[in-house]
Length: 174
Image (cartoon, rainbow, N blue to C red; front, side, top):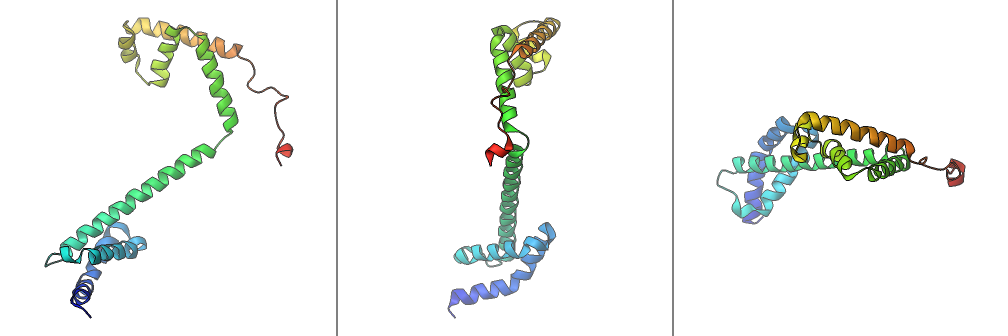
């Protein structure tokens, strides 16, 4: 056994249990073995960088590996939630509704569209939206109310979303 193997084996035997205990205390037994294995793989690759007393360094590496595992899990969970959101509901209906709203918005005056978009799509409070438009809050509320009424009328006047002749039965898709 060469000097590097001997040094690593001594370090592993002397520190593995304490590194494992640290990881278990932070994340539980289920992922402790994986994190400890990755920690010692990094230690092997960086054997020349190890300090005389390697335990604090190893625990620091284990901490970083654990944080990366947690970040990766958060990314996976986020992606899974996003994909779940994409697959829920009838997307054709959502697209048709969106087109309906966009057509109705397009039929409004530029001033009405701006008021509605500032509040609904930009999420501005009435106070802030009024400042953008350059009027008082009371005047903005009146204008917004009228714009909403015109939008409602325009939505009622838009043609039906999907013509009954265009609908496809589930049997036709098979």
